[in-house]
Length: 74
View 1 (cartoon, one colour):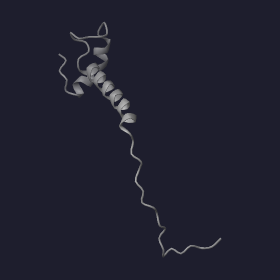
View 2 (view 1 turned 180 degrees about the horizontal axis):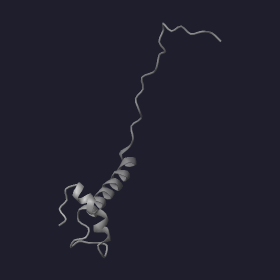
View 3 (view 1 turned 90 degrees about the vertical axis):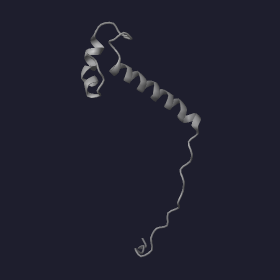
View 4 (view 1 turned 45 degrees about the vertical axis):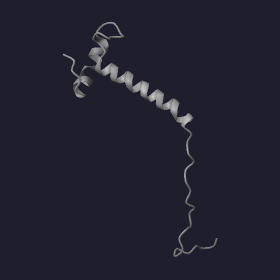
């Protein structure tokens, strides 16, 4: 096996990544936005006048997260 000289650097081709079409990204962006809005609703508003789930289980589950994120709850 021939020995390579360390004085000559290995030449790498400078390439650019292929662009990703918007139509491939858009469904993921819509899904992420809907998920984030639902999570903000759960942490910030669930348990009040706009409650989707009966009882106080979700409110109590998200209670510490509300205080951590500075959402008023009581």
